[in-house]
Image (cartoon, rainbow, N blue to C red; front, top):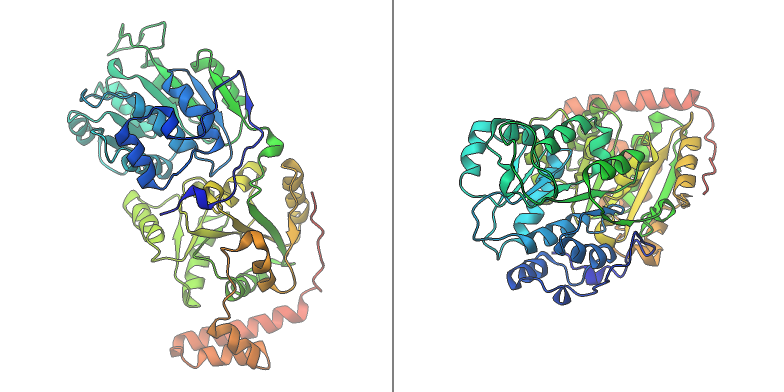
Length: 483
């Protein structure tokens, strides 16, 4: 279990607040329920993050709140703690609604709520596609869940069918608002809010026409876009806004590097060199297509790594199995697409590899934020493979005023940096073999000796292809990436 007192690092030091708010530096001073405090400490928190110091008290006071801060700063725990403090455990009815753009994020929020509420008589229900149908969920809702977490589509179905009743709701949270709008979910959001009363008006659509209930609303986002601002203006009333300026959104606790691979064909060899030099508990590798995620995970497994692929087209049961294996540490490497750039919250992830560069700067921020969770120090390495990659990475660096440096010639030197003491260099058996053999071909021959015949044939074909490719490949050129 992680403890944030060990992180030695707090992000978001420059937080812009729309009005003067009280800063509370201790959970005990927030006046929280004793059971909630136990849940917070059992979860591993010892002191609130800078965002939590400002936002939790505003939520408890009943204000509409906007929280915008980068990944890993405790935004999810912020609205979960504030909500749990406000709810009445004796009322066996839905009092809070949390909306998340994807099933993975909804599941992550559900896990946080369940852990924090472990010592409270408050139940949380997860409602998203792939779990169960609307009829089954309606039966579960009748059992008295105070909090419902779900994706917009499934929540809208429950509201339209009349199974989720807005008359008892006190709080609605939109989590990852920027991603929700990017996925084209604004229309669903607007329909959901038609079923929810405001502080001053009643519901205007069936089957809840005329229902009145004072509704507190919270919007949470990692980046702040014009779409987020529009949502705030449309759905919130006189909110308190806690915003981090864009040039502060740089995840400064994560060391960021690039490697010039010159060409796509050298990426895998470069990746295995990294794993042979740097040892971290777990790694997340991002690619841009589902097909490549499958190919890369299988290729890593062929080379003896424990890797799994996570794609957006997997059914819910398979998604859950893949993530449970990764969280439990049975899989050391997760290869995934951007569908999970925000849905992976695993404290032991120490390295993120951008095998393919992300298409936009915000996605880069979310990707590398999978390491360095809640202030932990981490490492991010991006591959530059010619074409426009260098210019694109340079543009990302300028967007967030960061420096993405070239990796040192000896990758093991990365672990000599004092800010990366959690990343270790381990001279593995494979590295020892490489040092004692005359060439890469000798190394491959040694590895092949223990392989079945089918894999030996594949390795032989691979060596022939590489020799041909090397004979025609252009000399590698260095690329200068700077802020």
